[in-house]
Image (cartoon, rainbow, N blue to C red):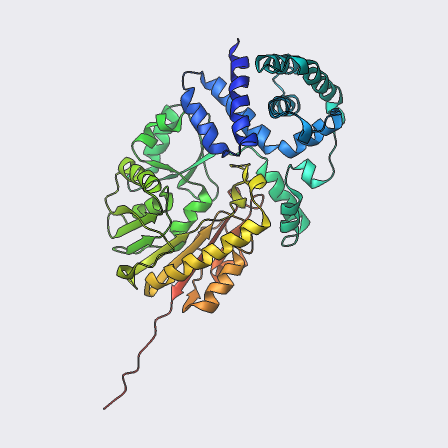
Length: 451
């Protein structure tokens, strides 16, 4: 078996776990790449692209297969369906792979998986795709951008058509790995020199000078800058959380839902060794992830502990200068990085998540000192979880919006920042879809009167 063929079979198993058994794409793919570390860099890159691309374009791929096959996708056997899907992706979007090789390897895969009687079917469908590939034209956005129709309608209700379409296009674009520099650990110059010495292609984000875009590396864990804790994987939009939080020297900070810890580590970095950041999450497993990142980065003004954000902790009553509530959300803003989100999410789940967010915010609000700040963030583009939450929170609790004007540099300017919140949209900004809001707890003056 050639390495390319071996890579296709590995990808088949990965995709079966994701598309047929409901596994999370980033988890299943990450586990496979760790298992097959012995493969060459180019083979792992092939597996990654083929996996992510097939998941990303699944709706479009299924539309193509339904045009070229008498047996519709929903009626196919799972293994055959998956072989055809990964093959169509190669034919349509991987120009360097010869169509004949794709068809031949698909037939071999069917045989290897004991579907000898269906190899003619696989070959016939794929040959039909090859013949017609130049004529496939999808005008409806669901097929064109491989996005569920209800989600497109969800965004169309909120945004102008060009804004929505730009977001759909951005989700399908190639996305580099974004890292934030821990500038209390090393200078920007040291970090850039280290990465370039390991032949990583590096660009500075146009949105933030401490955010770097990385391409053409093998393993992140193999980079010296990562091993030394100089960089942390974090999208530039997520890095904005620390900037609007604006922690002051010596601040006492509580992150109520913080795994894997990127935002809290940023706050520890900004505090330059002062204060203390307490970062919590629900399970021992998640807290271990945070603790591993704390050890790697070497910050001493941060600690992790297990706590359910829905349970009020009286020891923290009005004790925090800053509370960070980066809460569970629908994740619609990171579909470009985790494409299976668009197939998992439903309107009902969004409603449930919005209710969960309000429950956590109700608890978190009690931890903020008078005059202190609460920062709320999500990695989604959903008004129920974002703008609607801001209006609800300000109506329920003694807080006022913090003016964010100018806090995120000259490249980010939105009118809403005066009202204390910002919705970042892919296609408008080169980053994830992300929402940020900052609230200041109102100090109440007590009139003691006179005797």
